[in-house]
Image (cartoon, rainbow over all chains, first blue to last red; front, side, top):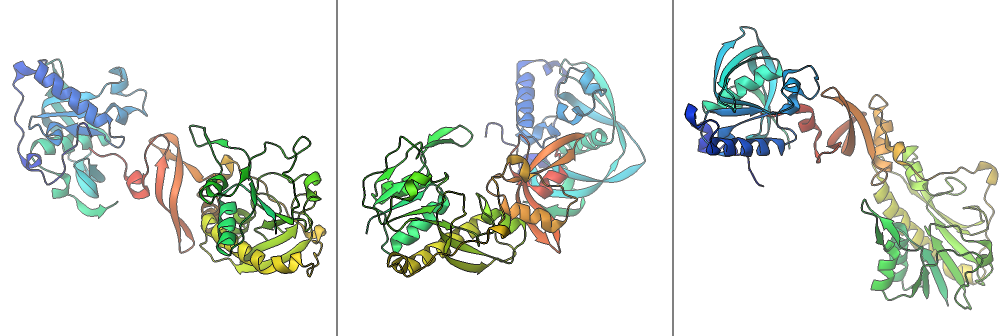
Length: 169
Length: 279
């Protein structure tokens, strides 16, 4: 496989990822990394989002697949010309108090799903591919993804917190 | 003794392999022509041709048995037809001295036509069997020479039943052929008033409605694989998604799906499909 997704026992998934120096955004190295992340994510039909450590690079970046918006023509991403969303140096600045038990899975934990408590809404501040500061509020699946991805950047896997883990083949 | 075997598909091969094991090898095999098969429509030989070549039995594949076709010179004692795939025209029926015989995998007059085994499974029959009959000009209509019955277990699928029926038919044939050739058996007419018919299946026949009885869907799954296969439509991320059901089982009368191929994707387990996205 071209861009294999790193699996749970690899130590890089347990490291706290380093911030991207702002001046490097837009440079070849980061551009190349983003291309590889998009390739790896689009190769997985069941993939919703991906953090850089999942392809072996310990930097604070995650992307969200355009496919999660595919059903909603009014969604933000449709307005964004149907591209994967990029979050560089993301910070979770607000989460709703209201939490919900949700089903979750992870590209780096193949064959295992579980129930996890997540805030229903979440707001993220980050830089986009062009180095512009962005703020993004999400609810439902998108809020869940924000929390899951930021966990990745902290070296946390959903299986650390999830309950009722089940194995599927 | 000189005889010819008319056959084409897997069932034909299974029958003929059993006959050959018992020392009954035909002097000629008649099969339908090579046909485009598979999704790339590659011209492929029928399974019986591969058997014929491996076992060095002469084979012909006429595109038509009618008018212009001249059957290789006799004398011929009998022809045996097993899932040939075409009607044997009346002009051939008079050639062999001891007639044209057919192994049909049902208890005729039930389930005439091309899909008797699948229909027996779909109907949940407890018993099925094979018939050896003398071919007449109408489809699966000739007088019966011999029949053998077999119990049909609950979870028999079509390929399994096909193998069992072929063996049963071959065994019966080996048993009766000396007496038939000696003229010791009289063929008995079918009860035409009680006859039932089957047809070829279409892709659309494989659609399951998941709200139907579990047993109904399970029987379809058993009968319609490997062809045309079974599928259903599910709501998935606001789309109506076509889902091919590759594996399933019955649990407390409920139809439980195990493995699926979602439209345009690779095969995955049903549980995983239902859990959906990963991040």
